Amino acid sequence: MPDDTPDYYKAMTAAELAALPTSFHDDLFAGQVVLVSGGAGGIGLATSVLFGRLGATIVSCGRTAEKMAWLEETLGEQGIECFTRTMTIREADQVDELMAAVFERYGRLDVLINNAGGQFAAPALDISPKGWRAVVDTNLTGSWLMMQAAARQWSERGQAGSIINMVTVPGMCSAGIPHTVASRAGEIAVSRSLAVEWGPLGIRINCIAIGIIASPGLVNYPETAKPSFDHNPQRRLGTVHDIAEASAYLSSPSASFINGIVLTVDGGADIWGEYWPLGRPDYFDVDYGGAGAGS
Image (tube, rainbow, N blue to C red; front, side, top):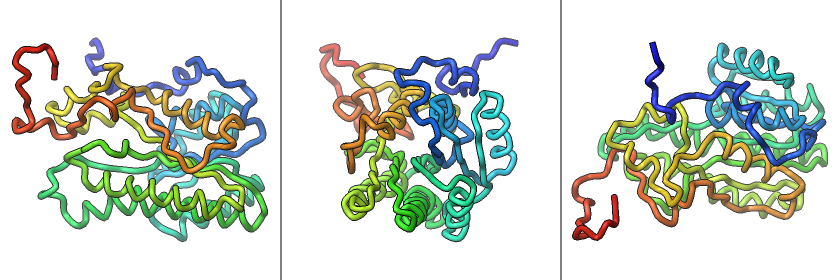
């Protein structure tokens, strides 16, 4: 039977990702070690594949042993060395053990990409304290623990490093995901603070603000959310490869003087666009009098 899954729900395979064009030289990250949390799917997989194509050894972590084993095998089929650890970034002891294992195994870590995170769309009045804490503890606290553990290792060894945090687009009203908005705003604020405090250590910290990206994760949103998926001047969804390319740029020598910024990759949605994870309420419908303004 034909696959009727919409394109924006489909996951790209590692082989498909590896075949995509890139503007970067194939040995850009040769000899380097890059840690991509949550590297087994979506943006994480695309980022792992791209950095691996460009010569890096990939380290990743996730909560499911089967996914981590699959990632090692999948990247290995593309000729990419990969080391994984099954864990949660919400537990400081597990994060410290991961960083210790990375430096014991490789003696270095060049780039940390905090990609792991989670969210669910729900009316603010319905979010339980447990649901709120689960999102904030993963997105904000988990990223903080990863940054601190990496910085401690770098500082002890006198090594420089680069950190990239994946966040939401600041300034956009993402009604329906208040826990995510709060946690990512905090992540941006702490990234800017640490970019100053850790500047003397040779540590750069930047964020990538991600627009709506075509991925299987979109299936978790209601049908009423779909009209806002491509609400940007380019009228399309982003791709996981778009985000991976942005990560490669911020980790490259070309970005060596870029620190403490938020690089927005959203097709211009922060300039013109709406994002309604639960669908736009009728209250916000605007009658433009047939002027062709569109919705």
